[in-house]
Image (tube, rainbow, N blue to C red; front, side):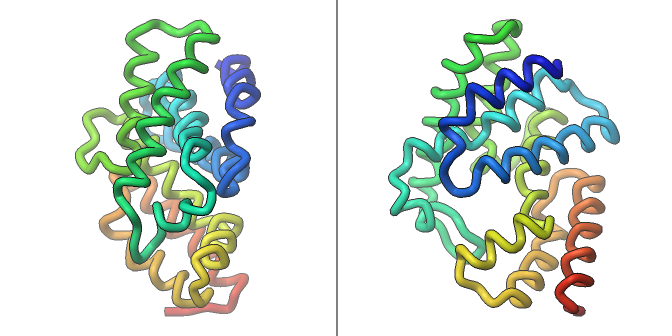
Length: 192
């Protein structure tokens, strides 16, 4: 699986040069591995899905990115474009690596609803969705986001606290998010 992941990162690289997705994907990948270790699940589904989940942002005009996502408002249609186009791009990339056809289909299904799907069907889908969100709770993700959304740093930190209860599908992801947010708070001198 390690060689497949390295190949996928190489193949995905041109598509991840927007929105800090190169940084986001590596951090989310590490969280996905942690969640797989803690919760189980199929790495042959989760790891390719998390590597490729945001390749579709390359199909959305860059000047529209901040309209498509954010903590306070977003354009759901634009966000759907990145999921649908991402699944198409991922399908083409996945043809280049040795995977069972049904696994390719499942990876693309998860990518196509990784932001919009509200009721995950599998543990693997839950892990991908949670790993995708967890990066926001790291110092890197938190800093990138409060700056790009032009939100006060402490306000954004408090917002992330508010998302903890309902944003994650697994208790383990919620624990990891809380831990990361505490680290950010300590570094920034924030308290609730």
